[in-house]
Amino acid sequence: MTTTATATKQFMSTDQLLEHWQGHRNLTRRVIEAFPEKELFEFSVGGMRPFAKLAVELISIAGPALKGIINENMEAYNEEGFNPKTKEEILKKWDEETEVINHYFNQISEERFQETFNLFGQYEFPVYQNILYFVDNEIHHRGQGYAYLRALGIEPPFFWERF
Image (cartoon, rainbow, N blue to C red; front, side, top):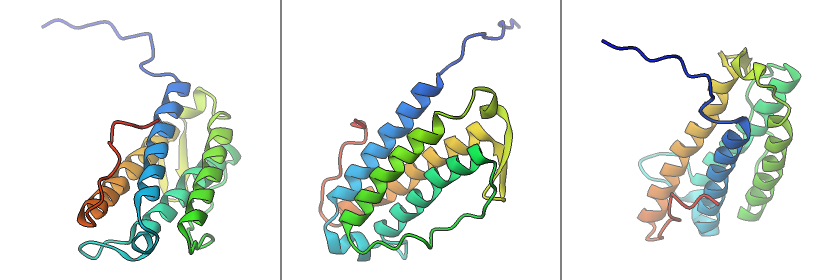
């Protein structure tokens, strides 16, 4: 049995991670845009939440969580403060949160990515794992949006076109 030396080069830079995440956010934004207004807020399959509710969840996690990490604030998760009534409101808030993400993400030092942080006072993991969770959660909910769009007879955006 042979072993290999431990790699000394990192797999991905923090800039590349942010670019990857923002690519997913760009695609999710296009999924929101693809929904007709009424169906965005009302249509669901199998008792799942309408896509507007899923989008509000995503909006309520990423920016506030990064702000909490930077400020070392473990305030509880809350999506009650944003109750959009239109697709336009969701897209506007989505774009605002994109800038919040860029602002706070760029303040996380390389060392902080390895630090454990109790996100929202209930998810105690290294910062990098919390960030990967944000991306994974978005992909999961975007998949629900794809299923909804297909059920509505709407072709969703190609999943590989993130920019």
